Amino acid sequence: MEIHTLVNERFLQACRRQRTDVTPVWFMRQAGRYDPDYRKIRERHSLLDICAEPELCAEVTMMPVRKLGVDAAILFSDIMVPVGAMGLEFSIRENVGPVIAQPIRTKEDIENLRPFTPSEALPHVLTSIRVLRAELDIPLIGFTGGPFTLASYMIEGGPSRDYLQTKTMMVSRPDLWQTLMDKLADMVIHYGRAQVEAGASALQVFDSWVGSLSVDAFRKSVKPFMTRIFHELRKLDVPLIYFGVNTGELLGDFAETGANVIGVDWRVPLSRARARVGNQVALQGNFDPAMLFAPIDVIDKLAQDILDEGTATPGYVFNLGHGVKPSTDLGVLRHLVETVHAYTPRQTGQ
Ligand code: 1CP
Image (cartoon, rainbow, N blue to C red):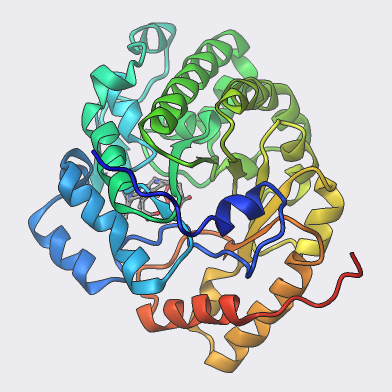
């Protein structure tokens, strides 16, 4: 299979805190329901069908690249796909998200989880990555869920507001928690490695719900696993992005896990995020996805302010603070990409 050289490396350069011609931009959940063509495909194929069908998966992954002009593609998949491969059956319910018929609660449930060998369990995902690597001339981001966020779905049985069962296991049964988190950390490491070997140029760990924890709980019950994950994945020599929502108080700890790029939601100004993470990591974020429904001049001003703060230090990737909302206007997203690319950084005196 012929492999394209990457003609646009500005996303990778920014992740490595190198100078770029213009600021790179991509959007979390950039393939999805805001696009009428995606909705048309979804009328005929389920989400999991798309993930299992490499040509279709590649097509859906490329749609936002062609339509929006973003600087990175992200593999079309879901954080729950490898969890299914560990033997925990789930379905994706319309307007709800992942639902697990038999959530894990006991020692036996955890012991019954299968070890995860990507090439055996998810060969089609790796094929999709190879197809994309041959077709794309921009970097492809591979991804996995973070162990805490995955554990929350596995234990609660679906989306949750308060993560009661999850936090209860975490503090009442540290032995079970350790076993489960170790299994998930192993999965993340093996899956991340397999994605990079197949052609992913960077990896993002979506730990979307870890911001529900106190700083102490994060340090005690999650950070050691994240540190092990990033220590292992660093050997692959690709940028590693760590993202969660509501993680303002955790950002300093995020930067100590070994990730190269820290995702920031819209609640924390980038200047404050920068003060918390130091200068050895890049930042990614943090445009409020709800603000994509504002008048265009308001959007431009917000983007300008974020770009001023983000580009004040080398190593900045423009993104939203969380995923694109399904009712977002595609034209507004395209306009935002143009605005980011047209931006000229203020002189920083360096
Ligand atoms: O068909 C559909 O449109 C259903 C919605 C949907 C989509 C488009 C789901 C169900 N998953 C996906 C694909 C997906 N999931 C992608 C690829 C799309 C892209 O980014 O281009 C990615 C990166 C994910 C990752 C994901 N899944 C996360 C982490 C990111 C985040 O938004 O925080 C999480 C938490 C999930 C679980 C999940 N899957 C689907 C939904 C609706 C949810 C969230 C449920 C909840 O709120 O708890």
